[in-house]
Length: 159
Image 1 (cartoon, one colour):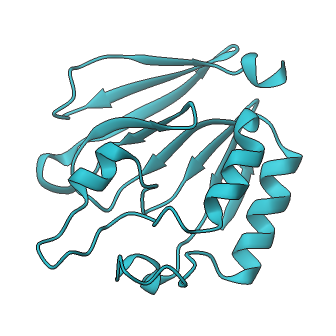
Image 2: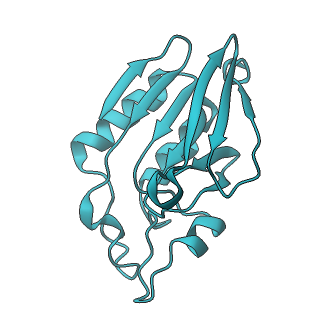
């Protein structure tokens, strides 16, 4: 877990328990241990303009499709996870979510929060995140996503 004040934005990394995504039929396994859950709960309610980072992606229709394995497992956090209630309650404070694990570049969203994945695997993709006044500029590099620059306005998070 890392909580860094990034000069107008707050970069927050959280870690998922290894077993949280292994069996799509087991809805009782939660992705966050108690310490991480409490950290995230406090952080998401205390800060604004959060860029949230996690290795394991949230489940959206797009990530569910991209994250399917042949053995019926899915490389995303199941919708039954209590992480989603934290995100729902604090979505106004989150500018964007960055994930990986699927090894494919994509743009998706959850509850109006943009989700980005630019994995280093295969094509050495990445994204450059730069603060420009009240905007965050995200520039995808070497991705299968149309080359585009994404701007997030974080004044919106204060409204």
